[in-house]
Length: 156
Image (tube, rainbow, N blue to C red):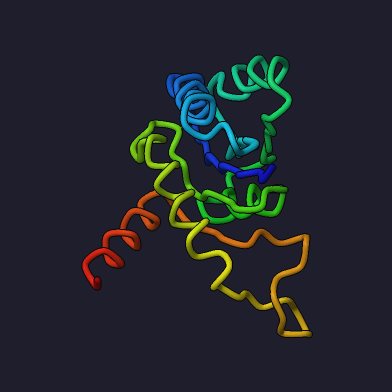
C-alpha cells in the first residue's frame, strides 16, 4: 500500500488544526482507502495553543507527525522541514490548516500522480537516475495538481 504524506504548515492555527486534521482524515477514510496517510504538521514558532492541540491529536493517531520549530523560519523553510521528514511515496505540499485548498482535492491529486508517476523521472543525485528511496517521487500542491490536470484536459 502506498503512503501519501500531507504537509501542513502552521503558524498560530489553534482554531484550524483540528478541522484540517479531521477533513484530511475523512478524505482518506472515505475516498482513498487504498493509501496510507501520513500527515505532517510543521509549527513555525507558535504563540497560541496550536502545538498543544496537535499533541492531543497525535496521541490518538500514529499517522500524525509534528515538527516544532524553535523560531519562525518563514513558510518555505518551515514546509521544507516537513518535506524532509516525509516518508511517503508522494508528498502533498502546503495543505493549509485553514482549508483554503480543500482536502477534497486530494483524490484528484492522486489520480494525476498515479497517471504520471511511471512517466516522470527525477534526478537521483550523482547518478542522474530516478529518485532513490529517500526522496518522494512527486511533490505537488493541491492547487498545482488541479491546475496541471485542467491544462492536460485542455490539450486533448
